[in-house]
Each structure stands twice: as C-alpha cells, then as structure tokens.
Amino acid sequence: SRDKNDRLSFANDNALEKDIFLNQGEKELRCNHNSINRERNQDKHLQMCSLTES
Image (cartoon, rainbow, N blue to C red; front, side, top):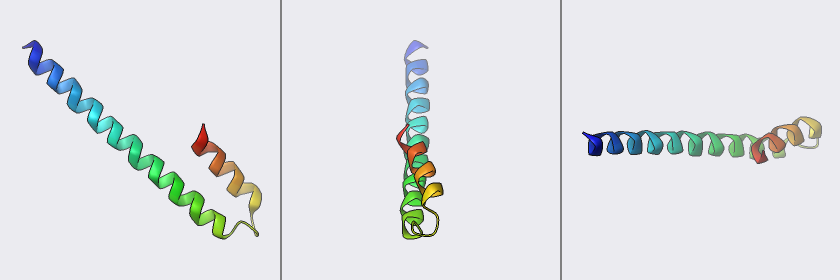
C-alpha cells in the first residue's frame, strides 16, 4: 500500500513539474513576442519579463 502511495505522489509531482515547465515556456514565448514590439511598448514588455524571473 505504501509503495502504491509513493508511486502516486511521484506521478503527481511529475504532472506538476510538467505544468510548471509548460507555463514557463508560455511566458518566455510571450516575452519573446513582446520583444518584437518592444519599441512601441517597452514598459509592458519589461513588466511581463520580470514576472518570469521571479
């Protein structure tokens, strides 16, 4: 029973890590996209990218 629980929590950790990884990638994509428009809207770009770092 304990082994089953360990395996379950391991699966949950994995899913969580995948979620975090996907969200991180999404934020970076958004920052890259914003950097294209940086000249027009530098402040907003800097705000969004600083969120990624924290």
